Amino acid sequence: RAADFAVDRLNRPGARSNYQTRVEVQQPLFSGGRALHVYRQARAGVRLAEAALDQERAEIRLHTAVAYWDLVLAHAALETARESAAFARADAEGVKARYAQGMALDAERLAAQIRALDADVQTRTSADGIAEASEALSLVMGRAVADAIEPTSELCGRASVPPVGDLVERALRLRADVQVAEHGLEMARHGMGKARAAFWPQLNAFASGALQTDAPLERQGTSWTVGAVVSWDLPAAATVGRMRRAEADRARLQSQRAFLRASIERQVYAAHRNIEAATARADVRKEVVELARKRRRIAQLQYGEQMVTATELLDAGTALAEARLSKLQAERDACVAWAKLEWATGGALERQTGELK
Image 1 (spheres, rainbow, N blue to C red):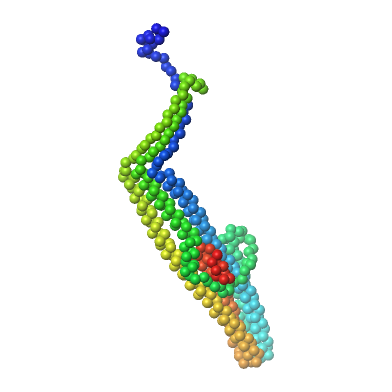
Image 2: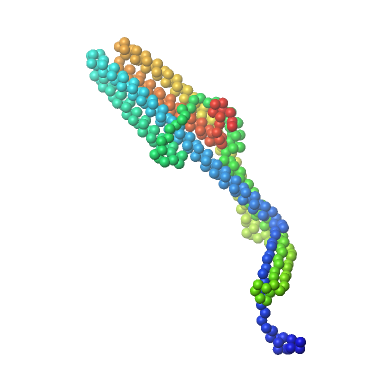
């Protein structure tokens, strides 16, 4: 129509609306390995977190074992204290009878009474020790302080220990802190790869489609676009700095891993020495108890024949009580040394034969 070509209308067209509904999809085609390194770094981070949790669990197991053997020691010490108190009271009654017959000095009677009272105090102290050990164990176990915990084991006896070389190899393979170091180093390697990817061009494909209309909710036309974009950021100071920082992190973690492995080896050697020494002390203390029992029996017989004084009888009883307590302490130390050896080597060991699990 002629009106459509009017100069005034062409110069001053009416306003038109252009509503669009657009959907666009982008797909990276090449990123220099950045996406892959990000994924693998995140996966290594998950494994690191799991290994760190295992490390905390190992520490809790060690603390629980120490608290448990302290409780076992407390129960054994109470039983020993009660038996020693019974012996001390019997000795006191015997010396008292001798004193009534004029066959013992008053000083000997008083010494026997003092020893009996001391034995009763030791019994009370041992009973308090059970309560304290039970409270300490309930703390590491996460139980209420009022919960009574009864041990189901006796103090350890002799156990064979695997060769230290096998234990070191096992520790370097199983310990959680070694796994933490390995996964941390893996994360650092992928961090380097991610930083290095910034030096490569990035290629991304894209596709988009749109609906065009003059009014909302109407469809009058469509458009679409498909293409690819290549972007390449020239290396800048920040990019180079990130790369160097990633290299420094990897070098630092490598040094820490080497130091950790050397430390673990020494920890295993120390734990191996400690358990052998603790076992040897327990064996010696066992022999000391047997000798102290023989001495006491001889002292009782000699006292009955008036060949020794009451002081020598009381000394023999005191020596036996001390020897028994020392033996219990040495056995507890051997149990704790075994628990520390298991912690140092990364897990439980078969105690009967010393074979590795």
